[in-house]
Amino acid sequence: MKAGAAPPPGLPRYVAVEGVIGAGKTSLAETIAERMGARLVLEEFEENPFLPRFYADPPRWAFQTQLAFLAGRFRQQRSLAAGDLFHRGVVTDYTFDKDRLFARINLSGDELQLYESLFSIMEPHAPVPDLVVYIRSSVDRLLANIARRGREYEANMDPVYLAELSVAYDQHFLRYTAGPIVVLTATDIDFVGNPSQREAVLRQVLGKDAAALKRRR
Image (cartoon, rainbow, N blue to C red; front, side, top):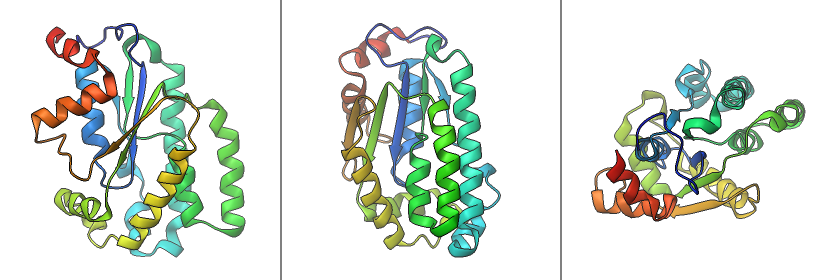
């Protein structure tokens, strides 16, 4: 589909791709956005100055890291809500709700209480996706993907932490009722390097329009 054009009737205008660290969110978001001709909005995690320090010493830097993520994600979401979200379509590689999942694992006591207060003020102002794509994967696959992308501060990622996040994500999206959701089990799927599997995933996400959009590009 030509970039900048409105999505055909029936296609979601705001698609959010979610999953645990290393699930392939950004790769799939890029693929969907390209097929739809939509604007791609990626999480600005590299702009969080506390993230490398968090991985080195989680108890010391969890609160600062979480507040920096909350502020950055809220700024992006407000920009989406204020902009022409519904003209050309938008695909993101995160949902605003995910911030709270990390906070409830990494924070406690007064810090968590303060975080929850700030989140409750911001959440009503974040646009709700028309479709969420949730990528599930095994911890072994997540670790392999993390190692492959080679970010230095993720080099010693704790498998126990990833397993805890996976449980939190599963529980959250099992109860998700804000809109339609597509769940992909990606442990044995290569939607980056395998064209046929990529097309199958796009059909699952975009339905029968996936192939038609490819022909219109």
